[in-house]
Image (cartoon, rainbow, N blue to C red; front, side):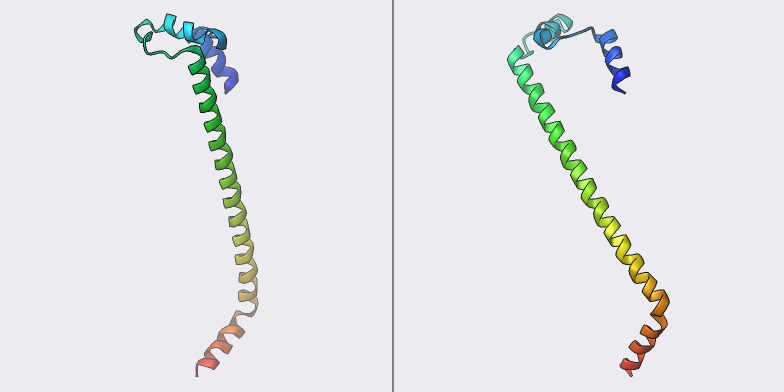
Length: 101
């Protein structure tokens, strides 16, 4: 996806390098010139956003891994129990009902 997205962005928005990002934004969007932060603030905010996005992806992947492991463990326990219920279930029910009398 990135192989197709990067050329499309360069074609439609033009190339912007990290060192000239502030100048590129001001030149591309002159009405927003007074609202565009400085180059240092831009780089700091992009770094913070990348760090936050990375932390979110890692925590999401860890959660998915834990959920998958829990599901597989529960599936194994269920199948193991079902095997013995199907094999010896009638004996268990008979013993249960005999103790109730």
